[in-house]
Image 1: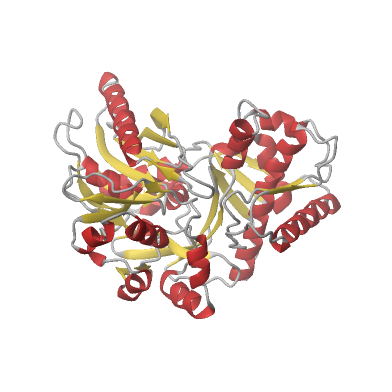
Image 2 (image 1 turned 45 degrees about the vertical axis):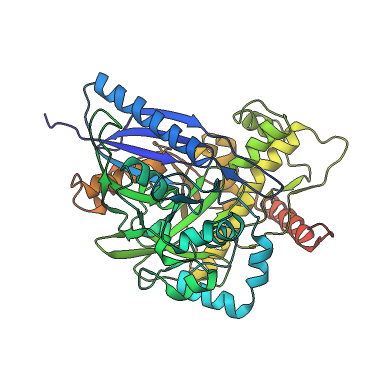
Length: 501
């Protein structure tokens, strides 16, 4: 009998940090998770305490590794996947952050970005990065820290500080400060990385006034990143992958061929399509980004980002107190035969693709005295499907061909009503995999590739297993009516510009 190999994936997300052990077939063996607090210093600001992220990381890794020892299983390698764009600067000597991590959702730099967003600047940025000028990405967050925290800019220019997205910060800590690295997918989300020549770009650095000396070295998504420092765990373990969470999910969904597409419904929702070895520049508000880079060869993708998906359901629970758990939304939605004309546009931190409007805020249309928790819960779920439709249509326009199916994952996909409605609105087959933790699975697959467990990325295609397909079952006229109502709601919201926005 062949001895199994085991891979530990660290998935550092927006609302939790989890460690998952997979065997070499992609089966989930052990899981530990720790929720994280989000910090809201003022309106539109979203932060994390980097020390809390680090402590949660160590805790879940130690508990998972301890269970492995108890079960007689030895972890061969670690893969890291992370919330992208979230920005940390820390002191190279002490390892201490100079400010809280500024989260990808944060909008504090929206006015600064809007002031930079003329047509010439947008063309310059898009040509090099495939992205748009937005507070979503790392560059404006870095600039804000450099300009607003006492002494930071000088220390950065003197080479005393390091910048990283969360992957780099955790790697620095895990290796005891020996490795200041990132991978190409995370680098491609900073607005500082040229996706064509695969290098930090001097012109972009000058544009954002960021010293190059603070940046990490960029490596392939599957490569040797270092080894955990002695004494941190019972034994030292090699780290063989780092990858942004949405790219990791695409790999976990085996989207390794041109034209394959996945959607991850977590805190936000991110639809990503593999476009092969050539970047496709969108005319419909989508992003061009790295899907992964292996053996020095970049593979590209187009991506659409929905800022509020699972976070909308969390708002129903924690903000409005309408539900006590996310699972309740399924029964509430099923209790209604229609949406009763209620539309929620969950622009809590602006609208992402294809609108890219950072100034609008969330609104509910169609409220009546009969509106209750069921209507608002259903509208919250529906909103995510409508935004997915907007992105799918944009992808079809850019690619010049219809999309036939979509592979999905993330916490929201446990909800059968939501997934069926998604299939209805998109009018395509939607496939849910057996393993929903595809973000961690993708990091594990890449670590297995980096450690030699798999010989090529295509080996993972045979490991992907479907749980259940969902096919459209809605009256066409009703579908068009719902979509028309959504379009009208978005138009009303984007036209509304009160003085305080």
